[in-house]
Structures are given as C-alpha cells and as structure tokens.
Image (cartoon, rainbow, N blue to C red):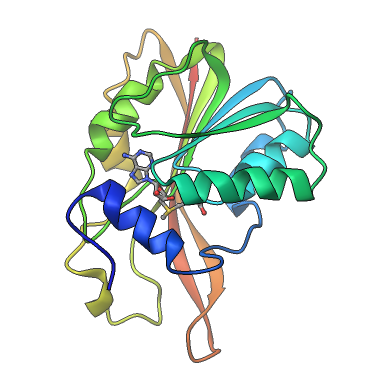
Length: 211
Ligand SMILES: C[S@@+](CC[C@H](N)C(=O)[O-])C[C@H]1O[C@@H](n2cnc3c(N)ncnc32)[C@H](O)[C@@H]1O
C-alpha cells in the first residue's frame, strides 16, 4: 500500500514500488501536436519516467522534465541515456510544481496527465503558474484524463472528478489579449483493458499559444 500522507510520499512510493509505471512511449496527443512544431525549449510538467521528454529531445527539443518523485526523475535520466539523447539536450528535476519555476521560459510547456488521486495536488494553481513559463509565441499543452476508461466501473478512481477541457481552460484563466486557444477538445484513445479487451479512454486536450 502506497504512503498517502503527502503527494510527494504517494508518488515516490508509487514509482519505488514498481520497476516501471508507464509504457515509456510518447503520449499520443503530444506526438500529434508537437510533430508540427519547430523544436526549441520545452518543459514537461509531471514528466513521470520521461517518455514524453525523451521523445521531444529526440526530435531536437531542449527539454526540462519535472516530477515530484526522485525515482521517476532518475528513470527519466536512465531513459534518456538508453536512447542516446545528446548531452545538454535533456535534464530531469525532482521538484514540486507548486513551487518550482524555470530559469528561462520555454516555447512548449506540456503537461500530460498531471493528475493525482487519491492524493490531491493543487493542479489548477500549478497549471496557472505553468502558463507563466511559456515564452512569447510559445504554446501550453494540457492533456488530461477527461473520464474513466470505457471498461472501468469507476470504483478504483476513488471518486476522482475528471477535468473537461473547459474546466482546464477555466482554471487557466488565460487573458484573451495574450493567448489564442488553438484546441479545446476531447479525443477518444484506444486502450487495452485489464482483461485484454479493447476499449477507449477520453483525453482532454487544451492547446493555447501565447501571442
Ligand atoms: C499520471 S502521472 C503522468 C506521468 C507522465 N506525464 C505520463 O504521461 O506518463 C502524474 C505525474 O505527475 C507527477 N506529479 C504529481 N504532482 C506533482 C507535483 N506537485 N509536482 C511535480 N510532479 C507532480 C507524479 O509524480 C506523476 O509522475
């Protein structure tokens, strides 16, 4: 049973309790959105074991991945090394995004499934702060679990309330004179359930460009 006394304890125990928590592959929404962008500086918020960050670095981005769990950050470093990402192209920081801020802004700030349950994090505040990390002309991408998987009865979700893209936009409270919202939509993603059957899960997508 994971320690649920704080988000940091919960997530560290979650990673330390398994050899690998996620697939290591890039998330579909990020791959789709970033494929069309010119590589520059990127920040991956709640980067986990580095699947998205390593993918970005392989495409020429200079990436900072930030995660609450030191074990996750260390796995990100190992994944970058295994993928032979050039030195200086990627770094991983173990830090709390409620407090952490970058030394310089980024052309892409991405958060894939920066969601925490049953231990709650100040997600909306973190996303609002993250908007401030985006360089002029850069983009903020928020990908979120917007609902339970089709095969789930929802019981394991501990009453978690999924954010719709509209909820994330409301939380971000972007100044329309400074931002253009390019995407606010739900995409169904095919997944395999625990019994091997195919199902879908809704990904909420918010993409905004800073003018
Ligand atoms: C559901 S996982 C997603 C991981 C990764 N982005 C992916 O798509 O595989 C959420 C991640 O957010 C991290 N996290 C949660 N709260 C955080 C916080 N306050 N600051 C930094 N990272 C946080 C967790 O440690 C975890 O790795």
